[in-house]
Length: 371
Length: 231
Image 1 (cartoon, rainbow over the protein chains, first blue to last red):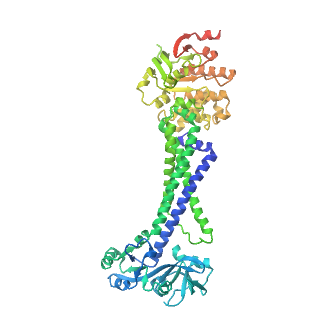
Image 2: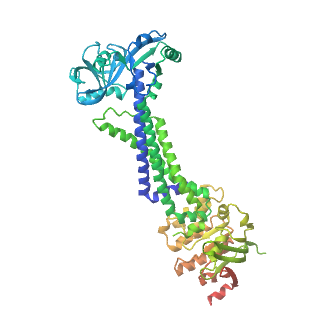
Image 3: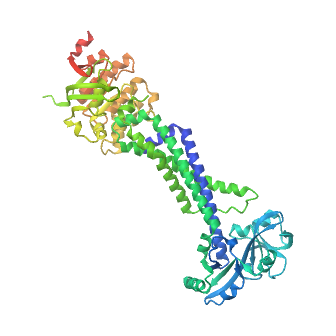
């Protein structure tokens, strides 16, 4: 017989309690897995969208990197940017929030008609907008589905009627849930003539990015040139989502550790005499600690593994809701699974430490007298 | 020449709680291969003495030598206990989730490096020695009181200890089982030359031993001829 067999039998002694503890931990770990995977999925999708546009550097107003919607640049800046050597293309875009049909707060992207961004969209039906002043709109796949709109239909955007000329599928949930118009038409619609949100720059030689970034920021001190990673990671929304995910993880860690500790304390109290017997028969304090810690860690690891499945299940469940379908995009990485298991492991160690210490400190004479 | 295996030199034990002096200057020598008994009324200090000899507790003053080792010099009593002392308790104290075989293996965990299969082999042999070869896979709840105590006796022998301490070993069994257990303890004493120290109220058990030490108010007050207890 080896120690793990004793540990296993101890856990099976109170099956319901062990199972409930595992489920409790699994729910917590599941919450972490689902939240972090959704945040990661969003970030990954956004980066892919920018890469899909063929953008190496994104130009934003200095100091507003964190919030895309606060970012307002003069369109004329584009002419100055085009003078910088080493740039293959400079493409402006505008982002705003509008009401489409009865849906408020829909994101609208404005790209140059017939331009690079417009032509790189992956169309499910229809095609790109080719003329600037036409009342045309392209819908992201999720938005088109939720509005039950097809190419050729007319929809109301900010009290003006637009014809749907295409539906597109993007790697990013934002674009999938948004409308895309020609930048000129969007500027007019939103009273933002001559204004853009960002400029996307494609470099002739991407390996020259640091030098060109420096050159742009020297020539135009009021703007920042950000790589895709910087642009996404600096975003306020992304930072908030990441902070929220990890904040919840910390709460889960605390609650889970207390739940595990409670279970282990009950288990140790119940076995006071038994631990006394083991100590009387020569078991070292270290072995008692080892036994209780193994019990705690097994419970939390089982909870961790089950929690990964709970988390993945929760994301699938969210996608079953009509309003959320297609908007919840999770990214599962080995790193995330490793994080979940490490979190569970920390939980097991934290939850088991105090009961193990207490169990090992029991004087055998007193423990044997315990009724 | 008889070899002393337990020596108590002017041992005292006081408990701060209740201001009780449980042992008052006890001197006692027990020799290798003895089957001896400690008798006395409740509260006379028998269990305290057993706890001290069993290295479960330390004396307030005085010296205890087990197999030549002064317990005052032993830092880690756990390992010492595991290697030198076997215990048989009145309430058996078997681990309820483990089988008879696994219970016998318990003391071998911290007695030095033993391969798991060797532990199992030895436990199996010990259970065979106490006549439980057919019950090795039974958990304690499926064993009778006598069988439980036989598992506990097998367990006490697991590490070939210098001494075996038995605290009221027949206290929880009927008279027939009690007689059988006494016989088993005698056989172990003779066949294995094990030193057995039995604490009991039962004159029948005491009569089956070779030496009876009488305690009263935390002191040893004399010795009796075991045969005289049957009269």
